[in-house]
Length: 282
Image 1: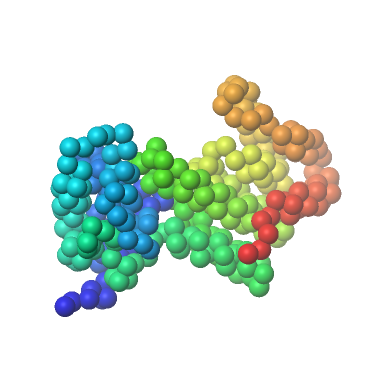
Image 2: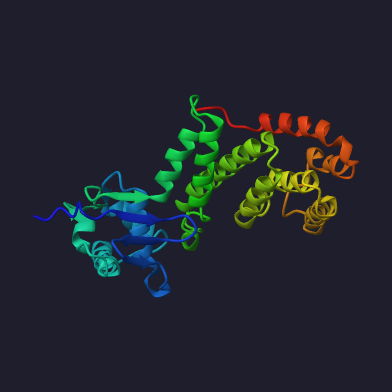
């Protein structure tokens, strides 16, 4: 029997959903097959264990009384395998079924972006990790995170906590990368990092703070003040949607409206505040 170990499957779940094997990629792009994609996503998200028919039926049809749930599941598994048919590995090998249990075949080499992010996070905050190595790993992790976990399935009850978890990891890694750049007084890198983070996590106050501060420290005081004011305007124009700006954020105005020769004193304050927000090592 062929083992297919010459293929490594790459699975994206952050910012979209796709499966790549060799030079072939299948992507979630057909709303008519939403249940089939959802089943595939669930099998991959929980690929480390076998999943029973009752569990899958409950997840797929939570509020529906099916006349033949077992038959409905088998029909959906057939449709799900059809989604995988363009790949160079038989769909029956990828999605296996035995004695009423289903699973994604973990015997075929596979990389999943969420698991890669977990590994990078652990290395970044390891007690033995050095700053330059941390920076390299942070940049790698930030490039890996493309957005929300399974965005087209974001309303599913099992997706919500996983999305919250990886969003939190992303923000912690981003804050560490900003911290390192601040320590090196590399304000251009801080600006680049902040803009990347805000393209994915629009309302992270600390990132807005760091962006305004880095703009100021790089010599662009008008842009710093403009960004600060735009953030305040957004908060105050959307009452109830977001928590009000913290005292920490509003105190930023005094710093970025100050004379240039006060920068160094302000930098010590910023670095101290950043260090307080750094997650403990794991």
